[in-house]
Length: 204
Image 1 (tube, rainbow, N blue to C red):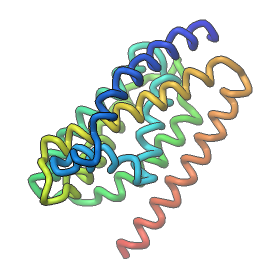
Image 2 (cartoon, rainbow, N blue to C red):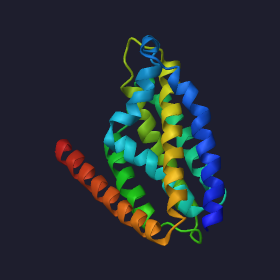
Image 3 (tube, one colour):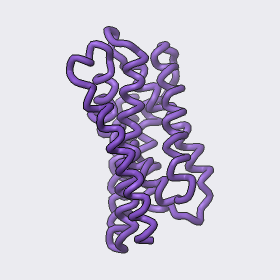
Image 4 (cartoon, rainbow, N blue to C red):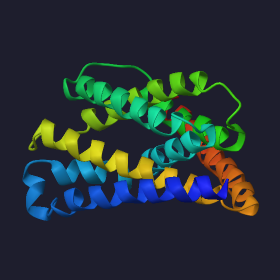
């Protein structure tokens, strides 16, 4: 497990390094186009942040092709959801879906393993990706380019997924880290439950 983790850790760190120049070029002057707004949007919302990182962690726990398949499924669904949000189409209960994503993905970190079927989680990831993307698209500033804004939060989301993968890979190196990761998943799930209660309370 340790050798496998080290090999994959190097691969994912390499991807992070490749993406850094893109993010570095998103200087404040680029905010006129919306790139910076898009890059920052997933980072400053705790519910978005936890969900994005958890996707990467869960994909490692499921293993195999799921390490890239599940994050790509999320990004694809998120892009479609963003298009609907940018067009201001009305979808119901999106905030509930976002809050539920943190709860479910936290539970996923606690329970996911290589021998379980990845398809139920993949289906939920598609649903959650659409919810997060819709929220991003709906909140796009009127003064920026939808294309650059979308590009920004897609890049930011990909980096957060990779960060989650790195966390998952590091956790494979030591048994106590793996147990600690499961405990952290419980904390993420508790945060998701709090988000869900807060959202339900606001809806009443």
